[in-house]
Image (cartoon, rainbow, N blue to C red; front, side):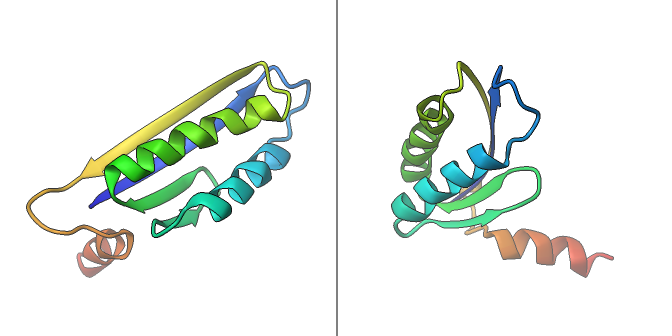
Amino acid sequence: MAVVEISIVPLGTGSTSLSPYVAACEKVLRENSGNLKYELTAMGTILEGDLDQIITLVRRLHEVPFDQGAQRVSTNIKIDDRRDRTGTIEQKVKSVEEKL
């Protein structure tokens, strides 16, 4: 199971506000996440589940700002794909909190 953080940023939109684009991405995410778990954060979105499903969904999300009129989109993807045991969003946070 993979934990993936994505940040999709439209460029050249004529506005400093990104929330309309984030909301459009969130709508697509809600409609297409299937069995993937996800969490919207202030600086990006964290997805948890099968890596192939996540990559397919990220590709779809990357297109959303273009559909909203953006002429350029920068998407950052960070993948934590642990194979020795199942890692989850909660487990990763709990592991750090236990050490505090």
